[in-house]
Image (cartoon, rainbow, N blue to C red):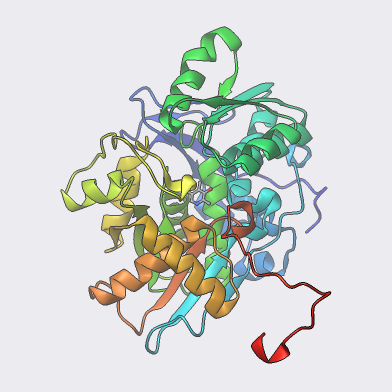
Length: 407
Ligand SMILES: *Cc1c(COP(=O)(O)O)cnc(C)c1O
């Protein structure tokens, strides 16, 4: 597809995901008047008339190829860092029974995580709407993606992360042109600083689901997956769930694809994976609740899913329940073991959050919640290279004679 060509957008309006209250397109929006996320609505009949599945398949340019289902009006506002479709890697040895186990490896995206999808869209829309300064709380990857895209777009960025955020994330955020602060608290505490500072600084709050466009970017994971699987969705999707944008976004993508007639009514079971050290969604799911209250003393090695409270809680829970899926927690020990098993067994280095989905897959097979004949997709949301890895102390003195029979 020609990146310079103007594409029409099909956005009709926006809507509060909780109350359905309608909001105008082409305006700056944060949360709805009910304090809930606002989502983008499209004229899907018009999209259907404008573009076919086959045409979309023939395009290049990574997730931007789903342009008719994205909100950016002017191509000049699109910021690119080399987005590519991410591969689906088959884990043959790790799969159980006759089923198929696939990893969607999101670590190949710019800045090494799928946060690039959401932030590419949020930044493009911020540019389109004339915003100049953006702020965000992050556990690391979102901040890195925002820094990169915003800097490229010429926007100023201020970022707040918990003080124990992986060093690599803090450094990459700063190096990519943002101003980053370590805060002695968790991501929700950082979020409060962003919210409280809005009036005085004039910055725009790009927190997960507190503006309408990150989810539109994350939605492309669902569009891409459908296309890669020949427009036939898998039986189960395991998604490492923090704020839940990806899970909600994929659910939205599937509904839009069905309205276009590009897929049928079959849906995967959506499985929200969390760590036992921070499992608010799992708790609410098991208790039959619509909302998930703050999880106290959240702690896990999987930093990306250490989200004690999520503004889109009800959207995650709805998608999981409507899909016939479930929410499941795995402990940090199982996460680290899963990372090692998949890396040593298949040569695929998952991030801890991605490894959590493999641990959850094993646990769900064992407790019978999924079947060994299922086609399963695990989301590995960042490159494993961004995280601390076990030390290796094996060495060899080349000045001594080497006993090769012992190597
Ligand atoms: C942000 C993040 C998640 C959680 O994604 P959400 O869509 O916000 O739930 C999972 N894994 C990694 C590596 C992340 O950076």
